[in-house]
Length: 537
Image (cartoon, rainbow, N blue to C red; front, top):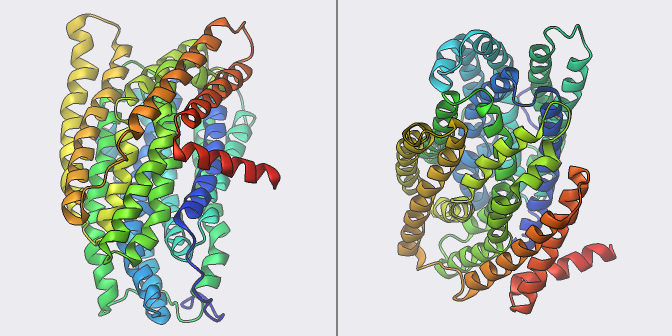
């Protein structure tokens, strides 16, 4: 089918306020992350930190590399600035042609890469998880070959996100992954009851992989009708040969792909190192990443994704871009600062509530908590850095973030090997404690990247900082909340992990908000006002 739609083009919607857009993005991400946590809980129930869980977690990383390499982050940096600028100038026809060409190019590229990936799976696995051997390696190879055909579906779903965001439709695009998680959950349950118990764990992992492929198709289908209506007549699948706007997308695309590749390489360095650690480390790292990425996505990605279309349309207005960047920094810092001590002091409570069921025991909870403790080192830097990167992308500068990310990955690799593998041996301690060094060293590298991004964007549009005095007030509020949460954690009698987490985290959150209000933090007042409006609804 060459024509994407046959309906009149919808008029460009009124640009939503960035705060409202960020809220819609955050709401969609929250739903998808909740679904992801449920998915991980079901996975933990059946597989815990078994060799099959290691194989599944590592296998999913390999096709996800291509999804992340070519998906939403890359399209946000290369496609959205061009598409949004064309629409901002009223060139709707040109914008539709560019969208059709990008969709065609992505379909061709991801299809070819999927075929190559299936053939090259054993070699890819040896690069990503060389510590695997025997049945774990064999199962991982089977799983990777199942995952690869779903790559095109997920990348095209990311293309839909770019179109929807540019039209101010933020909620659907970020809530769509709910169906992906739902499909995997159904597959896990079916796989657990599909045959004899002898090979149950491997069978469950295989069913879950097929569920991921089916979920990718559902995720695309959920968004496609809205995208077709928004693009309207004139959006045809093509390769965009000779089109200067498509050429600009391609020129921006390649450096961003390289940058995303470097970022993804960082995750694979962690996975490679984890594969040489005790059995269960890869799976535990995966569970911890599910929790760690929640604030990164919910706040860093939400604010950055919501701001990028308007930042791109107004990139030539230095004052507006500067104001948007500083407003985004405040919006991110308010919820992320308390997350750092929460992971540090209450991470075991969070892990137990989310995953401690079935075969997932208290010992597994403690191991996942080690990774979370290490992740607190760079959590704030990782979320704020996303916004600085978006500011560079709005300025059509995709190379500066690439240079900084390359340095971060190199530091992550060197520090990760030293602190995760060598330090436990040098100190003659349990190798499991290398989990702290693995995520902690990545955090140190993340702060260096953050500093370079902040300095670089400051040279372009002027220094962008949080208001003087805001961080001390936020950290004071977080310290008070942590003290209250720890006290409740200690005195609370033994109860179900979910009830325990609900009580502890409610006290933590209420204390943080109350102290922040007492210290006149504007973001706390806005959050309270938004909550009151939602309750009235």
